[in-house]
Image (cartoon, rainbow, N blue to C red; front, side, top):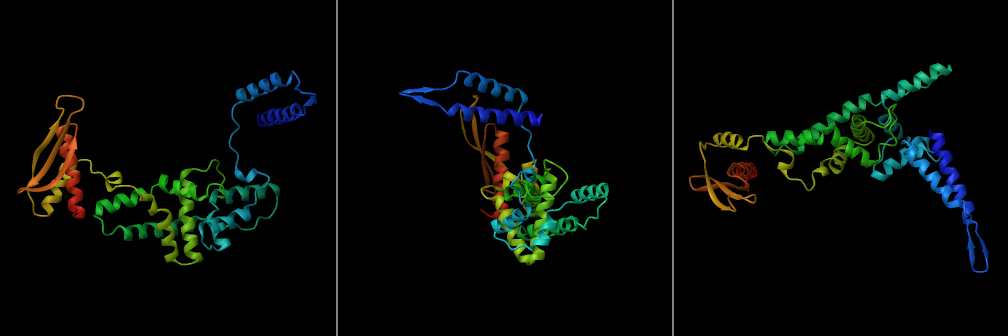
Length: 297
């Protein structure tokens, strides 16, 4: 099927090239009558066959793995040890596949080191640094931020946009998100071994923590029951009760209803919120009060 697609594409290009070799007689520009129907037919056949499946970047003629690995570090502005970086990009599945190929061909394969140990080391570096960075936040908020940044989807997103997808050595294609996430951790460990842990931490800050830019705390951490959470938080601070008050309302009994509720304790405003119902406004006010208490706004 792939050969059929390539044949159609090549035929289309050749016919178009031949059609463009026009004969100009006086003011007349002549194109063969059969060109347009033929190109339309080839185009229709290509649509029926469907799009060509994605191919690994390494199958392209101009692919040079050594140059790609070298360019990867330079693009990021980091000085990696070449051998350590190549190990960080080599997964165990690729090593097993290469050993199997060598066994079938009856040749001796030089030993390949996988990134298994680097993944564990990188995971610890990332986790410890994030906990240190978020230690000033409340424990549950810090845990939510840590889990958000170390999730497989987030690490895979960062790794993909760094350009790791094409240079990872693995037997799977397309590369799975879990593999991309593990490779990011291995690259962090490779940078630590190539330079020092401080440089690896700066790398994590530049590429991973920067993903929080433009986000609010409640975009990531949001208690399921804000009123209960606020009650427990106030009890820890010696405040046993609070009073919700309806401050404003508009368009009641319509689809555009809007209520404003404030939470008070001893005539002191703890938080204020809005919503299309009084209950939603109370929960929004509770979230505002939680943020004020945590961050003393």
